[in-house]
Image (cartoon, rainbow, N blue to C red; front, side, top):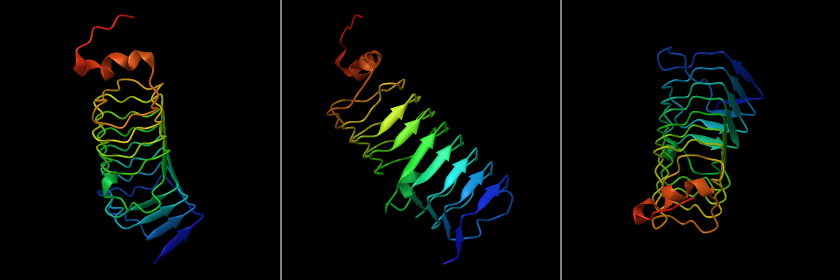
Length: 192
């Protein structure tokens, strides 16, 4: 297995269009800054203790990709199929990222932090989000079906719509302002 450790990659165009490919099968303690990975192929690549900052990772292929303690900051990550990743030790952190239309179907995101992320139309079907935190996130159109949301913190996020009967929500935390969206299916009239 080809291996890269403690390296920094800055302003490199790895996009599918550029023809430049990821050279190694395993990246450990690496830092990617302002790189373009649009529609690149990350299949079977392992990223361990890596950081991506200000990168475009939209439409990246993630078949059997390993993300172990990987941080994404200020990244554009549209339409990523995280459900295709290798689940072994999957651990990610997102801060100020654009994650709209990404898929987390059946992914274990327990204790994951999403900080100031736009997550429109993200699919969390059957996702384990127990004890996850959504700080100041936009969740318009996000799908939560049969998800484990126990002890999940949504208090500072907006546009949350989910069916309380179709998800595990014990001890989940919500802002009072989200109550109408959570109870919409019951057609209650709520006055504040």
